[in-house]
Image 1 (cartoon, rainbow, N blue to C red):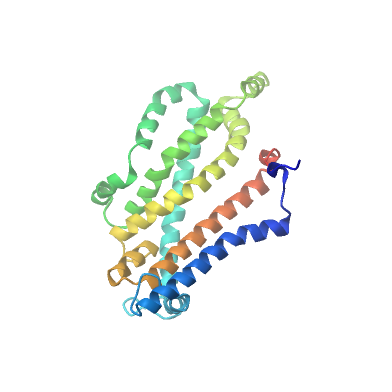
Image 2 (tube, rainbow, N blue to C red):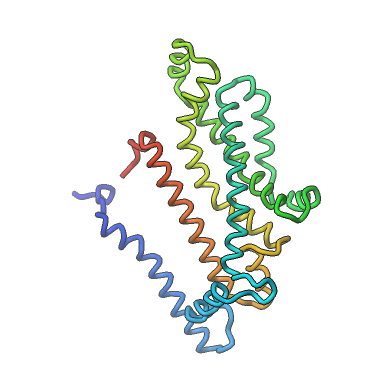
Length: 273
């Protein structure tokens, strides 16, 4: 008896199975949009695909009347700059503190409770505080991303480093390794794949914090544009922007996954099919 768990699709079948849900969703949208427009020609909730393509093409190719920039590309550049800085700072903090807390019992005893408490603070709840302390400029938006994901990265990496087999630590010390050598040559190589995986899991929250901050106080950015046109019910702009953000996030996730498997192939030798 052939069980479903033993059925492994080939590469071509995998592609078809992956595309099928997207095609179904697209087909459902086209049909629903056509029905709504037929019932109400002025309906704005589900604009036709052609209308969305026209709007996003205008934002991508025609200069903005106020700034003279191409809105889509200037918004994307502004958001990506904030995102890269925030993710880079959070990854650095997560790696340094994660290695320290996972490897040094004294540091873990003193700082782990603090990190645990900070990780429970809802980042959006302190957004007004960040605007008051850091102003309405770029720094407050970056700090929100850092506060939102750095505690998670610290705790995840600390647990990963603490889970390193004690035999490795004892053997390295027997061979004369110092604390710094243990951290750099034993713990760091094993923490890097986990850091990349944790960053992949943090992309969704990072975009959430970015879009939220841009919606409240910004003069450019993907979140700024979405909340700017919402007052006009411009779904022909909002939906393409949401799709664009999703595509960017997916590409980041894919690139991080490829980076992890290329740089640390030994960490994925037991990966399931």
